[in-house]
Image (cartoon, rainbow, N blue to C red; front, top):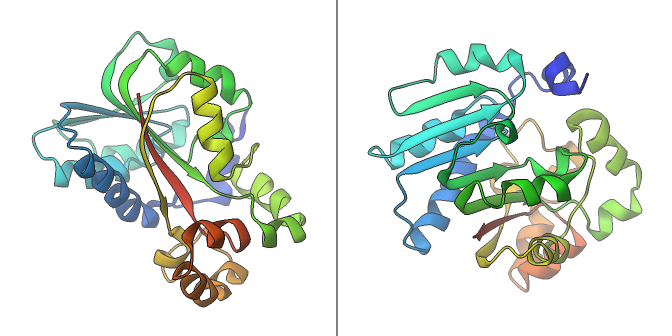
Amino acid sequence: MNIYVSGEYKTKNETWDVEDSPWKAEQIFKLLQKNNISAKNYCEIGCGAGEILVQLSQKLPDRNFFGYDIAPQLKDFWQARAKDNIKFYCSDFLETDNYYDVLMFVDVIEHIEDYIGFLKKIKNKGDLKIFNFPLEIFAVKALLGHKFLDSRKRYGHLHYFNKDICLAVLQDLNFEIIDYFYAPSAIDLAETSKSISYGSKLLKLPRIILSQLSVDLTAKLLGGYSLFILSR
């Protein structure tokens, strides 16, 4: 039994990162606005507590939102968040025949054992796809090799990415990359997120300073960024 169904993940991450959801929803909303996306139906696979969908529904009140996750413990979160235009399903999205205008995968791909096979299967289950990858391959983390194991043990991260790997994987699978941008998660969320370590918080100021020179260089050396991608 995997850690999400068994409840092990919830034991280690009681809030399911709800405190980060407004920020993540804002990044998605910016991506939608920048590219003039006016889709009707949005579906998040691996939706966790569902707070990203709630936040998006407030920004897009006339749209419909759907969330899928396999963890039964999430039903308590969903009861307080479900509305006429927000529906949740405790099931494997791949086992459905449903098709949505926009599919969203926010901090999900790194958890999936066969993520290449997963990406192949979801490609034709929606028109547009939005991905958020935490960028965990950077110089400081590579020097502190145990940090990769920390991510694996606490969050269930099985794979690690940088910008180039994210884009190459999607392009190799014939996804059309429409747009992408770096998002400074460890800068913006340093004071509020429970998932950002004390050591990472100490790097907030160096990240801010170096990012004035180059965000790409900052992500490669000091980390603290994720990559939001819009694709088809």
